[in-house]
Amino acid sequence: MIALQLFAGCLQQLAPYMFLCLYPFRKRLRFPKRKIFLVAAALLLAASLLFSLAGAFLASILPRGPFLRQMVNCLFALVLLLCFFWYLYTVKDLWQKKLFVFSFTATAALLMTSIYNYFDVKNLQSYSWLPYGGTFYLYYLIAELVTLPPCWFLLKYFYLPIEDGLDARESGYLSALSLFLFALLIPGLSLTAPEYLHSNPALIYLFCSLLVITFVVYILFFKLYGLIREKMQSQQEAMQLQHQSELSAEQYRRIQEQIENSRRMRHDLTHHLLAIQSFLADGETGRAAEYLEQYLENTRKYEILRFCGNPVVNMLVSHYDALAKEEEIDFSVRINIPDGLPVQDTDLSVLLGNLLDNAVRAAGHVTEADRFVRLNMICSGKMLAITVDNGFDGHVKRDGERYMSTKEGHQGIGLKSIADISEKYHGGVEFTHEGVEFHASVMVGLE
Image (cartoon, rainbow, N blue to C red; front, side, top):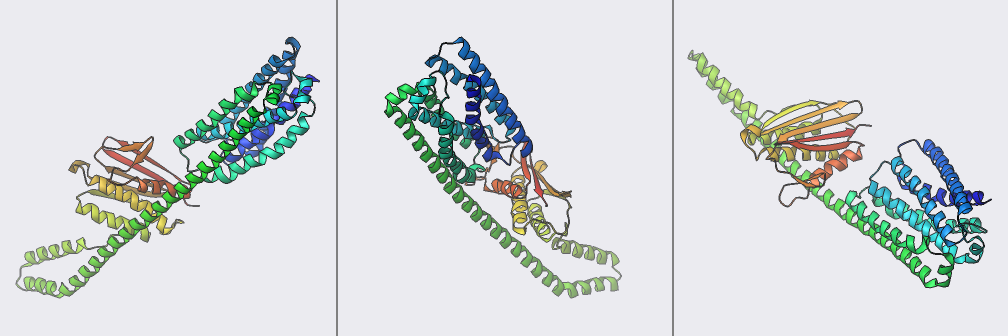
């Protein structure tokens, strides 16, 4: 009978909160959802069985009273720790995010159990050595139906909208707050006899108020972070538009120059032909050949190069090829892509424009031996791979593992734009450096 009570109570406490912990990460699980559900169910049953057998054993060797109840609660904490390790392994995400969701859920469960103990203390006195008994199962089910929806609501509508934008440090601060509250409540609630809570109602009110305040702090933090991120995204989009506008203006200027040069060359063509005819009439074939070679050399300067059939890529590469020649940078290109790509022209322009702009700028500030830019673009299967290697001065600026811009007054928006666009198309980015060579690799999905 005792083992059955412990088994049912443990299962009722663990099951809803385990699946609440998994809810925010349902798309980032290590195994298929069906397998996760079956393994979770098996783990819950095994943990509850282990808890019930160990608790019944403790009841057979220890006298009934508050000490036995505390030992059973410690035993439950060990079972919870087992579930926690399985949860950490199952979810594929930052451990700080997993820790926050787990501690947040555990705190809500702890406080709800203590509130139940407070209101049902008369019934618990008949089972003074058990954390469960009497009407626990019915009342606890009612308490879960009341408290679980707000927890789910906070996670879904306040945490999940900003969760993707939280980095390891921000998630660490959030999990530290949640762990602090959990550690604060454990000695006050888990190890305190229900009779003492009932005789000191101010204590339970204090803990309830603390939890409500914490919920409000969570909501304010999530809303504030969301607003800050929206502002940063707006600034990023504005800077991207400005960069795109500047790039388009520069490209328009170069096209105008090419048109003007072509018009001037057509106008001067008659004079050049007359000069060559004069050399040939005088029998000066050598001078005619030399004159013709000079003329052809001048026309090559204004030739519109064709690197590929994609108009956006060809325009951008031509633009930065011309800039590289002006800076005496060795600019090599290898492109093997179809004429049309399932990527928006604006995204492709920002992505490739930022990569080449950073590379050409960096290579323009080093010695002649390191003034190079190598661009490779290739389509493999359903992925577009872009790599850009360039020389630079060897100085980098980082925030953790993330590279930051070394340009004065810049915050690395260009690098962030590259990562965001790659992620938008289910790809990825990698930035590395070796000595005075910087390497950028970008993968873009073409589905």
